Image (cartoon, rainbow, N blue to C red; front, side, top):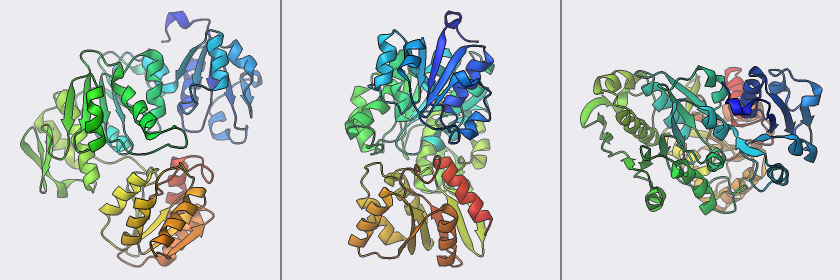
Length: 450
């Protein structure tokens, strides 16, 4: 239940959105009978998928704009994580004495269970999913956060003995500073470059990620990737006890094709349902968390062959006429796309590109030129930059598509038996799609309709 001191408070949700965050909060507030309003720059039509799940009165909705009067009205504002702290409307709310949260900090403020938080530039969804699948064999475990599941869907079910695995974006990590509270266990997968259209510098972006550990208690644990050079440089800033992981970690290790947990062989890499060294490293993070929570070798050995990656993370959709179609839509940064490219050894047709987040594409373009037979670029400023870099590489086997069905048809025409069609954009989804999950869903539908 909501804290007693919140009874009678007025809540304002700034950004209902389409990816379960604001909607999850709204449904929970509605369930508990709280007085709330929603304000969003999107229109009724744009928000239709969320609004159909939420029955609210007209005076509870302010769409297509924000109004100062709503921020003066509110006692508590729950802002979309992407809203910057210096937003002029949040300043109005603060001046009136309102408390400011985002969905992650608002959840943690209410959560009675122990939380394992996972962040990083790439690999956080898969790592969170691995940890969830392992811990649920010993504990009552829930999965939510930036992975597309609102934790408010299960908040009322939680007990103090339960475990919550929460994927956190850099923006959601910023919310931890609002409540001066961090997850009991924090996992940092890696630190690359991303969201430079939002952050002033890479330093600021990395600083947001490190907030995952800043407010941990004396019993907190920081689980860090020792194979990441940037993390090793940042580690002295983390006060919590550190457990390092990597392909040669203490809790988990990969030696040749053999996987070890606590120095005992538990599986061969050929036994796993997922491929790629990057996923093996994600698994080592999960094994380190499993070790913290005292999962037995017997349990790990039994569960490992059944572990799966979440949808949209290097997900095999279909094999048609000898061609594999893989959905890697959550590769929203060049580093993630490069990991996918390195994993595939067959002739490759890549579907990539989209909106521009001010990231560097040069290394990705170089690898594309080396690894692919052809590239289909989706509309967006990021695609234009990728095209120009490919031309500098002397690579001209690219086409453009105005929609996902068109992109899939073009890839289908280019592919031959024994090849792979890979959706791994390396860019943001905004513009052509609602979000990266919509992008992946459109790819899946188009592939299944071939």
